[in-house]
Amino acid sequence: MTNRQISKSANQQISTWIELEDRYTSGVYTKRPLVIVRGEGARVWDAQGRAYIDCVGGHGVANVGHCHPRVVAAIREQAEKLITCPESLYNDRRAELQAELVRIAPPGLERVFLCNSGTEAVEAAIKLARLSTGRPGIVAARNGFHGRTMGALSATWQPQYRQPFEPLLPGFVHVPYNDLAAMEEVLDENVAAVILEVVQGEGGVIVGDGDYLRGVQALCRERGALFIVDEVQTGFGRTGRLFACQHHGLQPDVLCLAKAIAGGIPMGAVLLGPRVGELPSRVHGSTFGGNPLACAAALAVVHVTEEEALPRRTAELGAYFLYRLREVDSPLIREVRGLGLMVGIELKRKAQPYLAALMERGVLALSAGPIVMRFLPPLVINRMELETVAEAVEEVLSSASKQVNK
Ligand SMILES: *Cc1c(COP(=O)(O)O)cnc(C)c1O
Image (cartoon, rainbow, N blue to C red):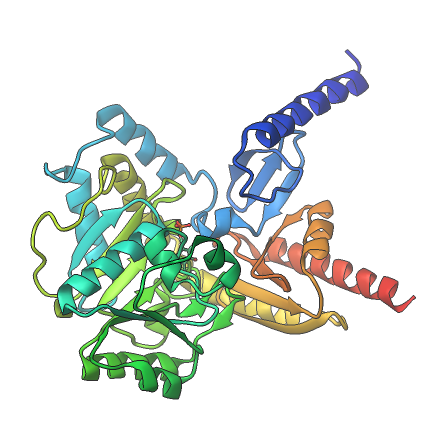
């Protein structure tokens, strides 16, 4: 076959995959016309063999990079030994992981509930907060995102995610983020917990203020509510500290983790402090929670994150990337903001066409709301790759602005 014939049949194969997914998928996702078949480090490859710098990073999952050899080896070894084991029995990998999570967590978090996703971590946090305090109320922030199951969705703010599914749970209120006075007003004796992100991710990469977050924590202590921090997106080095709480010396009562925790194997975790108190048995649980396969992957992620000093690396590279993007001179940019390698560019118009243009140039990035371009690269990305991303952004936003000026 000639090269042309090969590429023609490859193209047919690719359209078949796209057609199959389009025919059989639920329809709840919007998709880009790209079939990704392989990943390594900060890069992914499409079915035609074209490489992309991956600033989607599995939506903030691939912190240690795609297919990190240590994670792959841990999964392979564990898969040959034991894949499933419910929490009604003990397991070696689970025991080790629980101890490791407590060791690396902010001080005071001493027990662990394991589950399978971010929304499940938030569900557990909400349930346990109500159980522990005997109060119904949950306070969350505007622009906050906590997941899409009914409890977590009740804490999520975005009306377009909520409205089709109302009525949601009673007892939830939303207050402006970074506004301590607004928090003070709603925090009464009916409130079981406040749930906040340290940097709001889906809501547009909005960086939380340290004084605000510490102030909310103090108010929670004073008024008998639990302080839940949702680090599903900011955890495991993303913001330049192992946990974003550590930028501000926060000591949450409940810490929700997921996304990057197990290198791409589904997993969530809820870490609990002493103010949660003793929990009666059988009040909550999960069939897959704490399964040995996910625990083995997560142990590998913890070790890689520490051995490769990914938080420190992320702080340095993130500062460089932010600086570099702030240099981009484009009338389309309203603001560049972020922490570590969690970076957003707020535009004065819809982000989607510019994300598509980045893709053409070999860079995958995602949105955070309609007008923010978001970058969540694997933390193993190198400076040259980040420079390539910044140059692509520059090209896309300045060539676009030329068109606008015509
Ligand atoms: C992604 C996300 C969730 C939901 O996680 P899923 O695994 O998609 O259920 C919850 N909270 C935050 C902050 C997130 O970024």
